[in-house]
Image (cartoon, rainbow, N blue to C red; front, side, top):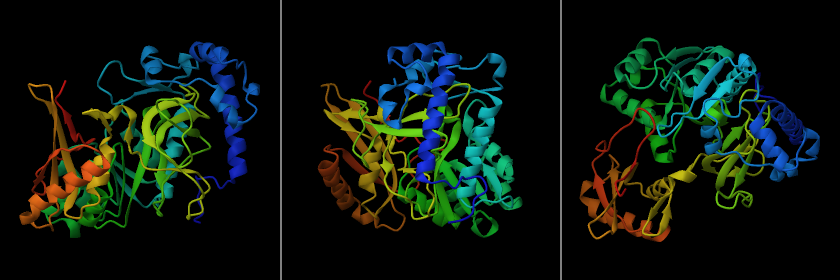
Length: 430
């Protein structure tokens, strides 16, 4: 295992002790500083951290929801005096009140650390030049990548999303070695590099991508077009400081999360009971060091699973799978519950597809729901086989997802490309 400077080398027993200590500290901290949490914990019969005898006592504690954050606007869950707050960030949501998170200086330092750990796990060094293609401002993504660069000592190139011409210019002129972006932006940029015959003029070696579900075909596509050594899936959200809560290592067998900073449970989103080991459910997070806006069993809405065992890389930090979607992204079509990730899983089985798709839902005058699934053909596939491919995809959708969409095969590059999070589902029924 590599020798890391910022990632702790710790045993499972040490991690457990660290988590228990951090959970007790968090409870004492929020009882002292948060009227909201003090009342919730009193209802649960918890008056101090000493009431927590082991991590098994987690189930005694109340959950926190996005509604709790929005109802507490503009300082939800605040557990320190306002004079200790040095920064605010907010989620990228566009409906209702934003979820605003406050940060103390220690919180900002921890945010820097978790991002720098991700860079270190991806093999970056102070010699690297990181081109940042995610949003700045209230959203945590851009500043998170920049903080990680500054902590590790990399050069940061904070271009932000969009502005493809500037990104191409800096890739060639500055020789950026790593890109931070969404998977959709990575795909778009790779296609522009190919279109402009720049593959031999750039020095890009790695991409760290996140913020949206992706599939293996998309990943292989931009890796191939850009001639990358590797790419890494990063997880995180504003409520967990920002990006950088987890990253997949070069073995790519799940995302290592920083268990000394967070406890992650995976629960059934309907019953809030733990799912069997290795099964998919909603990730629920408890912070262990967060000062300004701590989280106690916060329902993230993200769907994933915990991966048992120790990674072959040797790192003791536990792993969760990639984010498969969100519990609130579920679509009900003719009585069947569908997650967008299921569509990607079906398309993975067809080498003739490029992995890009668009799903449209509408309701006719008789009140009957209809679905159109547009799928991009792989550049190597035969266009004359489109009809057979559409029928095969339909059969697999019927077998695995239990729905029967209209399937249309379209030319490579015909579906929309996105500089931020991809929007592949258009629900026009409501």
